[in-house]
Length: 224
Image (cartoon, rainbow, N blue to C red):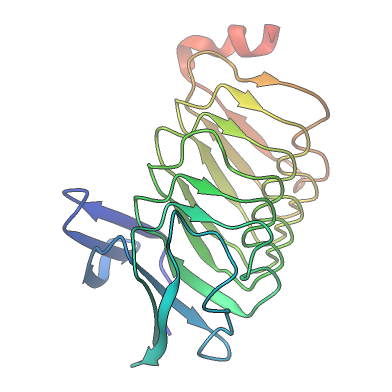
């Protein structure tokens, strides 16, 4: 089983690389019709039809070889459906194609994910609580281009220790990181403080949790 704290898309369309620290774990061809997965129980039981993955897109095979699952589709995938076939499964890792532009509400909630990269194709239409209660989730990469963090997006991810908010985020709906009890560091890259629509995004984090902002914008953030 592989886990990674960084997933990089090389040349956007060619290869996906996974790193643990600076160590390259593996490199795979990037394919916008394939999800690469791992899970505690190997093949994840996902119906071949009945979910919206994109226009006229269905699963055509779901195999598991060499400690890796391969879910293949007959077309380009642009959506993680709501309701989600992944919710509550023993999914531990997934590589999402860059063509995905929407992750539905509760898309990966209550799974065993250890790490996740939200691809750059996803801009602002992340669904509510799409990673809520992923108690094993430690590593999150939110690609530049994401503009909004929805309600409860990482709620109760109790193993998450650090998070970087990309510079493109402009809106943070309430309780994004509520009860992330291990969260000690939040790195804010936006030069303009994101609008908080309601609630406290950082209630019940780890003792001494720090929010780091651009040095030239400290007073701007304090005033906001």
